[in-house]
Length: 264
Image 1 (cartoon, rainbow, N blue to C red):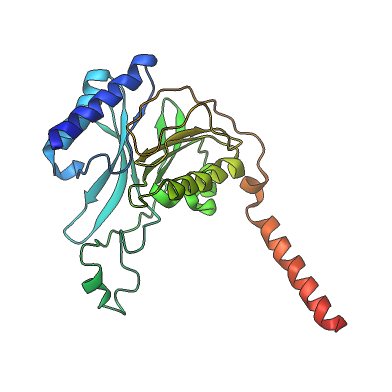
Image 2 (cartoon, rainbow, N blue to C red):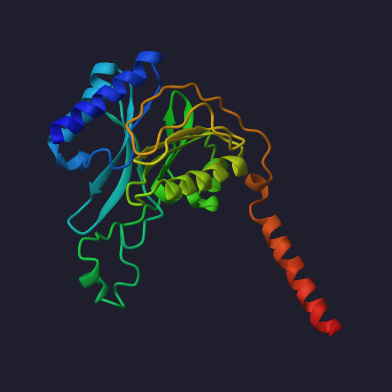
């Protein structure tokens, strides 16, 4: 099974590179399970190295990074054709009960229920990751549903969102479509495009207006594509002012409620 997975990954990467040599190849979260720095699962690591090594194209993939036996991170790594790590991002928004157990300190019995859950550490930094002078906004899985997190990266100069996602957990296409729909809002809010690569979900290229560019992947099937992404950075009210409009709406609603009570 592991050999078949390795062969399939390289075949898909090679197919994407045949159209027009891309600047970056992205793999979905969960495509393989590796701890690159510790050389855990070396067969998968060799399969990953084969892509930039033979195709001459950098690759972006998800990774577990063990700083120590008790401190470890979910990561997105970019590996160059020279086998150098040229981009490294620690996931900031962890999935509760999947990547950590909330309030475990106060309710230790939760560990007996979620026995396989690891307590990953949340990333604290927002590193600048560039590919061909394009500043990447890395996102792992459901980080794409957080408006504020994306906005912070855009304000730092981010030009393109790359979202590595594993939608296998949902098990149904409706939930995968919902995750895709929520991700599109990040493009609309900030007026920048997104490349979304999913495992068993719906991979897609999303424009700065939130429109799906071209065909998206079929749900639950292997898919490979290569496409030029138009980079735009038009004016964005949300990027400049954040949630000011939402706060104004809230204040307006409170005024209406107070006026109603005063009138009665």
